[in-house]
Every structure is written in structure tokens, then in C-alpha cells.
Length: 295
Image 1 (cartoon, rainbow, N blue to C red):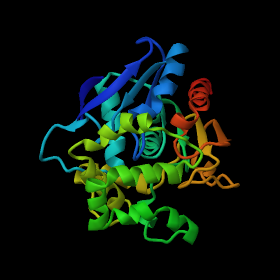
Image 2 (image 1 turned 120 degrees about the vertical axis):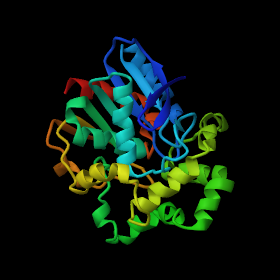
Image 3 (image 1 turned 60 degrees about the vertical axis):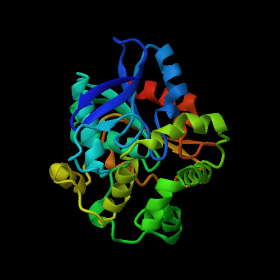
Image 4 (image 1 turned 30 degrees about the vertical axis):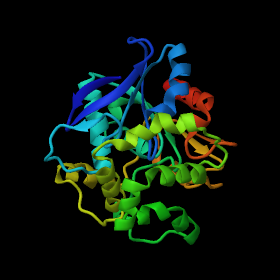
């Protein structure tokens, strides 16, 4: 594990592969951590790729530098964190790959700072930038049902579950979202300590409340949020990975995200894979990273 001061954070990260190889930054989601990429980094490192895997704000050993910084989980914050992380490591350009929160951070940097992104691998919805101005409009009922956890975290009861009952809650979420993934206790135990970060609950609660307009954002990111509200197009080469049995973001026959991507593009639906593609299908994920670097 390494650390670097980046923006408002001291970011902890893992690095493997040759220092002079092409760089990919791999970004985890909620509720997961860097260990979802253990097999992916082994595959990519063997192919000469420099792999960098940070813990996001509120996770694992990553820490805020100041007690006065708002413990925001809004999308503008995680996007700004990724850009600051690249600057701190003096990475002018890299491939970005992620899912869930990590996919959102990757999409934001690809949309707003495309000159920094060699290629993008994004999972789930594909275009993972939230449309917060439209968040008050209800989705189809089946989709609303899958988002129960987001509404749960708007309540004090949900916050208490994050604090006091998170092992039961997150194991349940892993099973719901990835019904074909047979994870064992060792897999859970490798990731679980990342949720003991002292800012984890605050960051998670703010993330889900902000996305529906239920909590104000950190004014630091007002400029970024204004740009994201316009739903900017992504111009960089992109591969979208979707798990066919994803329990929270199941793929649809029509590729609804396609109009948001204007550069080279490929969508791949993975049979027998769900919400956590890097851990469930590391070979397919690693192959997508290699392919997007060549698009």
C-alpha cells in the first residue's frame, strides 16, 4: 500500500506492474473496495500494464486531511478526487476503469477532462453520471424497487444499519446484486475492514441523499455539478460492461446510454456476471481494459 496527498485527501492505493508501462486506474464501487481488482491487476500486470487502485473517499485507509472538510459523497467530489489523484501522481493520461461509484468517477473525468483519459471501461448503466436535476421524477416501479437501499439511507434507521448492522446489510446486498457470484468468507473478510473508515457512514449517507436532492452539496464542487447537470457527452474510446444478471442495474435490450458516447464505443453484456464484473469476471474485465487502450 502507498499513500499520496491529493486534493482534500490522503489517498491510499495499491500499485502493481511496471512503473513505465501504460497506466490504468481501477476504481471500486459501493459497497466494495480495492480487493475487487486483485485478479484483474494480476492479469494486467503480467501484460505490462501499470495498475493503480485507490480506496475512494470514506473507504479503507484513505483519509480527509482536515476535520473541517465536508464529508461529501456527491458525484462532483469523487470526480474531483480522481483528477487530483492523477495530478498528485503526475499521471498526464491513463485508462480509467470502474463500476458503481468508481465508474461514476471515471465517467466524470472522461467527460470533463477528456485529454487526461486514454480510454474508459464503465460498467452497469454505462453512462454513470447522475442526472440530479431530474432526480425527482419517478422511475418505473420495478426500477424503484431495486433502489430500496438508496431510500433506506435517507432515514435514521438506514444510517443506523450502516453503523451497527453493515455486515448483514452488505452481505445481503452482494447476494441481491450478484446472484451468480459465490463469494466466500475470505473474500468478504478481505474487504470488510474498508467499511471501518471513520468517515464511511457520513460519506455514504451524503452520497445517496445528495443524488435525490435531499442534501446540499459541498460548495467546493458547485462548478463541477453545474457541468454534470448538463449531462455532458463522453468522447473518449469506451467499452461498457454489463452483467446479464445484475440485480440493481440489469441491462436492457436497447442501449439507452449509447447517445451519451460520441467516440469509439463497444457494449458487452456478460452472461453469468452481475454487478461486480472485475471480481466476478476478471478475465473479461482485463481484456476490456487492454482493448480500450488500443481503440
